[in-house]
Image: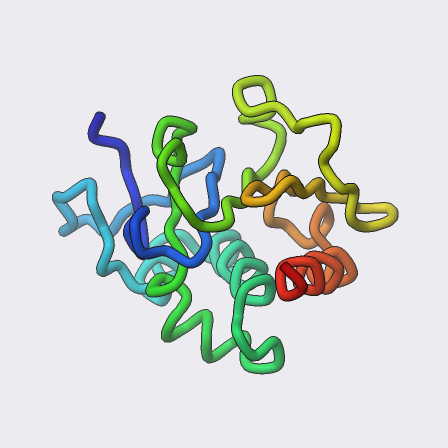
Length: 154
């Protein structure tokens, strides 16, 4: 299967985000394996929506939470892989964020998963985290902070 994969490879990623939608690729890109793609190019091509997606990712996984902007712009896709198909996460050994409801029928949340958050929630059964779509209406800073605490504790 030759599915689109962005960022760090499945073998080396610290985190993988399984996303329900793919970004538009720069017109001059012919390959489906974009391990050397940079965030600024993807934001330039896809606009503010993808800037917000990358911002939430960076806030979740940046080693220094206060330096998430620099991490997003320079290091996010060195630490994070972006998958778009359940088949792509079968052999991943890192923490996997299953984003949105799209994949829950194929990759259901186990009954023993820990519920995180209040009004906006995520469920954790490591190495998997089922979380809302990466949009501030569904994924506010309060949920980002709650998940960061859980990830850093583990």
